[in-house]
Image (cartoon, rainbow, N blue to C red; front, top):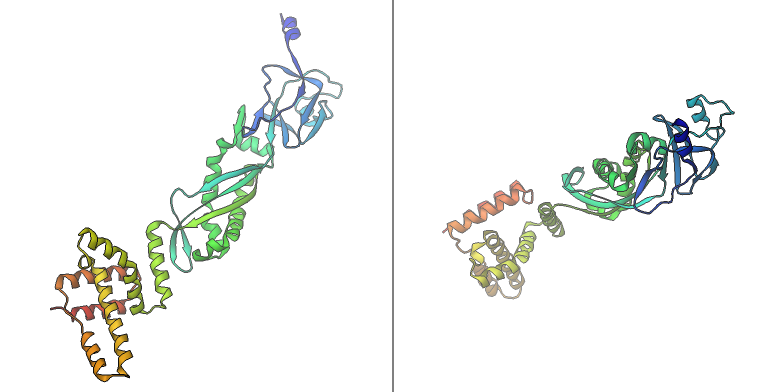
Length: 350
């Protein structure tokens, strides 16, 4: 019976792998109980490496080329099985092929905003996304730490872990780049370089080489972007409070038109817009008064009378103060600016 089993046993004399392009990183040659013929051939293509595993231990690693399988080409296997140099019998061993091609256009991105330190804004929560490319550099390490004895291991099996590694080091990359948030959009290459350097060691621990990283977009959450827009608007007018109120009024005009047209309360319903409109009217009156003073003193006096502050209803004053307090809490108004505006509004109570 044992003799019949030996006769029926098939011996493998050619070992090779033709990649199918389906994202396979590691593939185990299907032995199905067969043995490898002594003197058989192993073909490893340019984009591959092969690993022989005997009794759970890596026996040898082969790079691209064609090999004749003898005790001379498998010295580690010879040692493990205690073969002498004349041993020429078929043998059993697991053979794994690994793709060493670059795995391109792998995506990374923040599912939730990541908090980082910024020298301009302090703590900032940002979103970012891009892509990266990697390849298997150490198939023995990849086999022992990642793919193991699985028949097939793909890029999809690994993507979740690699994306988590990329996101883990975003804060480190921003800090290492020394680039403020406002300049990140113009320095995405430097940000990408620091992100690659921060992750290269973690990839190497898995037997991988991180070949490239790109950053396609860096942005703030919507609510923080609105505050940033206000700060930018303040900077455009050089910190002058009067000009900033004009800026706020100009921004609010479309909303006033919508409110008036839809019967939703109009200008009086928007307390912040009311305060801005009063301030704008005073500034315009002052400019008009200054222009007339030299030519006609009587006209200047009339303009001054027109510029006199008008009374405001108490509920409108309180609503305006609440809006100003909110701007102060967000850091847009200073304590002194808020106090001055508060005193000015209280004087206008009727």
